[in-house]
Amino acid sequence: MFAGFEVQTRKMLTGNILMILCCIFYLAWWLVAFKPTGAIKGMKSGWLLIPALVFGVASVYQIAGGSGSVDNQLKLFSGNAVIIGGVAAYVILFAGTAVLLKRQVTTELFLIVGWTALMFLELNALYGMGHYTRTVTILLLVITVVAAVVSLVCYLLYYNLDKVKGYVDGMIPLLLVAVMMAVVTVSVAVSGCQS
Image (cartoon, rainbow, N blue to C red; front, side, top):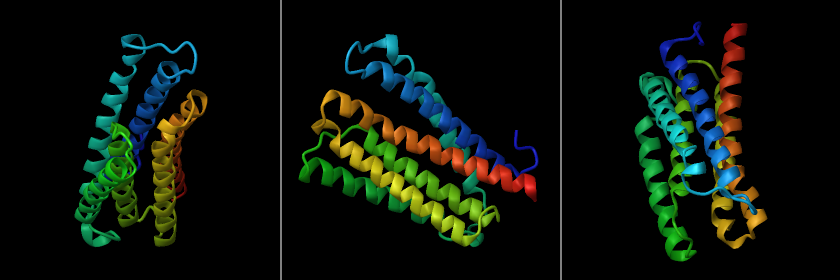
């Protein structure tokens, strides 16, 4: 798969596909476990989280490995800045949502911040390897931030919504992540085929 690309690019694009698979299994679990009526609880639906976790961890490994091996001098910003920024954002959001907004902190906050940082690392590396222009990279970074903000809004609203609205609300971040990963994968694959 992606045979014509450099090793780093192959790793990142493979990581994207793994993340899409993670989202599919996570979404499948959400669809059955949180149905407003007739929800399937326990391991009858919970087993879907096992492949979601496996694909998610494998995705992070591939994307981080691919992006981390690209020369920092070619990138827009350093990978360390992204990691430090991600940790700082998580701490601020954790404190802000838990203390100020009194929102129960759940794993989803970590996943939203972690995915955003991962996308920044990947887009930065793809720019450094010449797959994207500066303008396209900045546009995709902005879209990533918008997706993260929408996901964060969904996260904050969830416990204030009725069952049906909460059910839909919980799907939105997963769909945004899957679509974003697909957009990056397809755009790099298509540009690689044309070059």
